[in-house]
Length: 522
Image: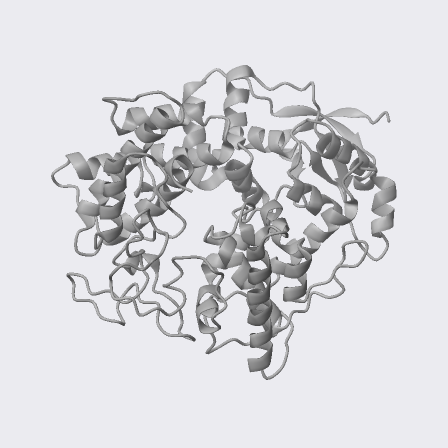
């Protein structure tokens, strides 16, 4: 393979809108660039180029399509160069690039790069597969590989053709096709809950985790899904029961009640049999109550439960997990819910009618309502923080008591007290984690220093680095990004005129909670 190597002006090169790293349909280069910032460490590459210079020992590969120079390999590098010369390309992240440019003012960044010109996209495919699916060079994730193979299927390209073109070793290509089919199926569904839809259609849902569910025969049978020998689904038209069943299953993953270690997803466990049967009854119950089965595209769901947790309550089909009182239509009146919210099983945020100091009744924020209701109010209107999915697993009795207080505080009546306590539990949780997991004591260090230590400890963990960076964010930023930052937490604690509202507390908790789950929870 001897393809020509040529110079191309940077502004002549176009990013590949079919880049398999992009989890949704990209509309323009800015959409690709913003995704690469969030998911592919683009700003880290920008920093490396500005600091060390652009190295062209590993050439981007382009194809010429209708007179356009499309980058099929090296989109991340080309995007980084484009963003350096035009920071506005990355939208809200442009100030970060401006700061990097100020930090490295003498950086030598080319406006013209050497590229390898492939004769066609088809000719380049084996090279891309070799680079990203078998070699250790920044391998695509399993989901990205599935997208790669699945996207090539067409009336003229069969799964057998792919097996011939890409001998990928021990992993059957049909497993990648099944993942591609399921990914396309759930992204094409009509959702009642925008939050669940966003979870499914972004990288928040890990298909490699969801695979643990749909690959189990009993789960597939319960959902009425069958794959052929090549991993294809005969149809992607879903009945109402199937759609609701899939939404319920996806909601369980979003709420972290299901994961790859859950006994409900272990074929040999009794919990799996029980869960599969409940899912089957849930799907069958919807079929029995629906006047007819419908496809995904032309359903009308007015008047039904608005999300999968309502469905679980209305059909009594929730999985046998403690603490599901809010979604099952419980009449808990503010006492112990019996849930797993924290170690004490106190009232979980936003579930059950509350009778707190504000005198809230059964129709106020946080009430789940009866089966068939439109679901819980928006998180920022609830009087309690959403503790779903977090259980303190550390050894500090003092920190445990703080979490108990935090879950009981009415954030509408006492937003500043709750906000101050958020800062306390974050700082103390980091210290607890270092003392018990890493055998290092951070005695005397305040929040900023603790966050620095945490960032250093998790620097190789991309997900945690992203979460920590959101807390450490500084400088000018939209209000939605300000809540939950260390600057915001410190300001409300130290500045007399700084005052927060209940919504700020909910937003801060949403930002802090995933970190706490990782370091002191489960």
